[in-house]
Length: 222
Image 1: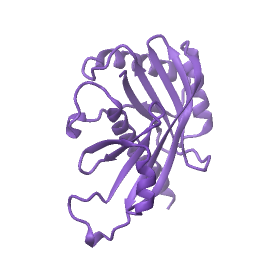
Image 2: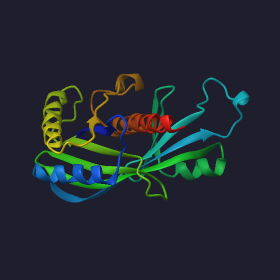
Image 3: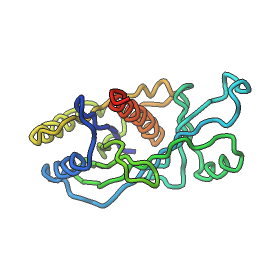
Image 4: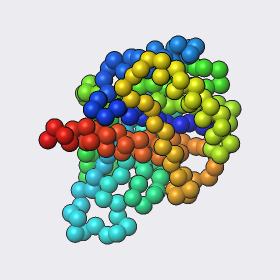
């Protein structure tokens, strides 16, 4: 499948994300000849174990991330960051976990926005909001290159496109920038050939960054 880089918006110190920045970023995609092709949505949930701490063995995950991707609605991806494990399951596993009551959902987030086509590239720009809420928690961007599925071989062309994107954003003097943090997929036992599990890991990682950024902004107020 096509390579994806998933990036998150890092606000400048003393600033926060807001709907105006999201609007400006979306307009920027159109300014570099991006053709809007509709909407997209990904859902991510943090699960926490219902088992008491003293009853948990070292191999039993205390928490993990569950991800539903728009491209494969029938699948559900579980990322256990502590043990570096990613698992692909049927979407029905969510109902099974709910009935077993072994884990509870601590936080559920929606990633949703517009999709743009730029030649062989696709951009998905969207907001991060809690489920059943419109409180903006972050801004994300999926950058996809269709012709290549090798992670290693994609670096140069993805980097060049990202540089072009950053130049376009700089003209708008926005209080922040997009950050690309490269995951170590080998730690999860994944091959160079890109797949949906690679996407799930990136979402788990950037969500951790968004949460950390949110806490850092709130800390001075406390």
